[in-house]
Structure formats: structure tokens, C-alpha cells
Amino acid sequence: MVGKKNILLYPLSLVYGFITWLRNFLFNSGILQGKEFTLPVICIGNITVGGTGKTPHCEYIINLLKNNFRVAFLSRGYKRKTEGFIIATPESTTKDIGDEPMQVFMKNPDILVAVDGNRTRGINNILSQKPETEVIILDDGFQHRQIKPGLSILLTDYNRPMYRDHLLPYGELRESIKNMYRADVIIVSKCPANFSPIQQRIVLNEIKKAPYQKLFFTSFSYDYPLPVFNTNAGFSFSLPGGKTEKPLNVLLITGIADPDPLVRHLKNTFSEIKHLRFSDHHRYVQKDILKIENAFKTLPSEEKIILTTEKDAIRLKEISNIVPPYLRSFFYYIPVKINFLNNSNKEFNNLIVDYVRKNRRNNKFS
Image 1 (tube, rainbow, N blue to C red):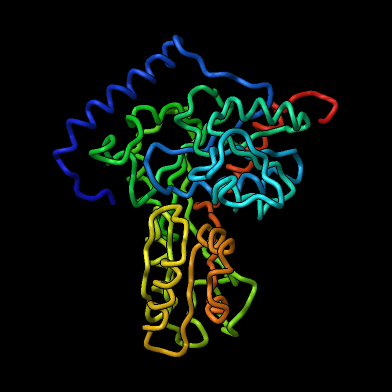
Image 2: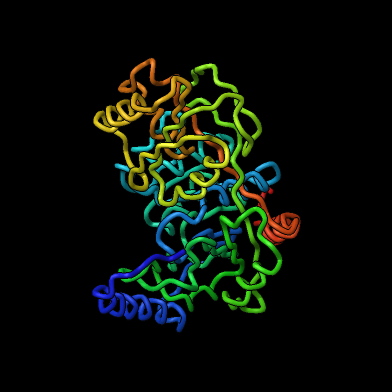
């Protein structure tokens, strides 16, 4: 849940709140206008700073649509070292396009993945260079009001609910909770898998959604650990969430905003876990690998392994040359997927597909 706040930051949050209120007022009153496009644009975003699970939800929608529609994924490419509009290619790196777009591209090389800090320019370039595109998924674009998406999906982390938080820098909200009403769909992410109907009803009452808004609950599920460097130390894993065949000591490496759900999952699977936590989107360098190697050597058992996240694996693969060869064989990552609670995936799927189908452009590529 949301932690303790520094009261000295509260006055600054009032100033920040006024600035964001004024900006939203200009858009809401029509003084400033967001651009609408002639094809379906699905925005997936949040109000809270930090990880709410946007990438797995984007991947879910990509997999839902890509077999029947020509899909493009547009992100700003957070922490990339480049500028402007870039389309991902097999030669792209995280420095070119950022780690999240790189992850999406590596898992979905059959769709268009592009980055641009200016989302309006990005969509215009996609339509200019790839006019056959039928739907654009806009990553982390809820505050990018220069674009008026056709369908807006807002995520809130069950463990850090937006309705119990405060504006930056006193809290972690990018804008007032009142702006949640711009969303067509609200998803409470990272819920416990056994989230009861009574607990869901409590959350529903606290969110106070509008009648036109759809509300869904999702949880994370973790798949089999996979080798980061395409090598294997010979370990055998049981089903996700079950105990391993051998008692392993685990060194967990994370450079994501919220590793807590993964930590909780691993505690149900492994007996001993040592966690090295880096900042979100951390770019690993030689001294980090040395720190990891030293921590790994201190694990008490000979049966040990290094686990990391899928997003971290993307960055680690690019620096395989500075990872000692013997150490590479111990690196595994945990793929993550989302599950819709209450068997509501069919309702969500129909909502997304119906929107795209009804708003797809009529052109020679359709």
C-alpha cells in the first residue's frame, strides 16, 4: 500500500496540482484540443508514477489483435539514448529504443514497434511510412493529451491504489484522481490470484467509477524460468509456483519499479532468496556485474541460481561480453503474463476487438 509521506513536500504538491489542473482545464474546456485520428488508437496508461504492469497488458492486447489486424505499438522509449522517431529493427538495442519497446519487439517481431517522445508526430510518421496500419497501441499515453485516443485504458496497482495516493512530490500521482474519468476502462492490476468478490466490491466502492466506465481486475502469473544467455546450468524446475526439484538458493536481480509481486511469488517457490535491487530501467555496467558475482559467491549452497525479470534480461543480454562465461549459465528470467479475474477476459477481449473492428479505416489495405 501507499507508504508514509514527507509532509514538507505537501506545499510543492499543491503547486504541482495547480499546474496539472490548469493544463487539464485547457483541454477539457476546448481551449487546447487533442488530435483525433482516422484509425483506432488504444491508450494504455496510469496516473501513478512507477510500475502498474503496463507492458504485460500491452502485450496481452497485441497478442489479442495481431493475428487479425495490422498492429503498431508506439512508446516514448523511456531512457533511450536517441531522439525523434525510430522504428525498431533486428539491429535495434535498448539504447536506441528503450528496454520496454525492445521487449515488445523481440516478442512480437511481426508487428510495427516505434518510439517517439512526441506521440502526435509518432502516429503521423507511422501512418506516413506504414499506411497499412490498422490499429495503434499507445504506451503510457494517458497524460499525453495532444492525442485524443479512441479507447483509453487506465491501470491502477492493487498494492498502490491511485485513490489512496496524493499528487507529486508528496505522493506518486501524476495528476488528480479526478482525471480518471477520462478513461473508458479501468484495470486494477497485480491483484492477489484469490481476490474474493467481497474484496473486489470494496475496491469498486473506493474507486467510484462512472457508469460508462468498465472495471476489470487482473493478476500476474509467472511462467517457467528461461535462460537469459541461452545457456543452461542443468537445473530442473517444477510448475510455476510449486517447489523446485532441488532446494536452490536464489540471487534475485531486479531493475524495475515494483519487484514486490515477484519477490512474494519466489518466496513461495524457493527456500532462500537474496535480493539485489537496482533502480527502474537500470542500465547494468561492469561494477554491477562484479557486485552480482560477489553476491552470488556468498550464497551458502552449491545449488544456486540467479533470477531476474524479463525486462532486466533484455538489458543484460546486451552486455553478455562483460558477464563471466561461467556466470552466464546461472542467469534465468521469469516471464510474466496477466490473468483476468472472474473469467472476465472474454468481456475484455470483445470490448477491444469490437472497438477496433468498428473503427478500422476503410482503405485498400483492410
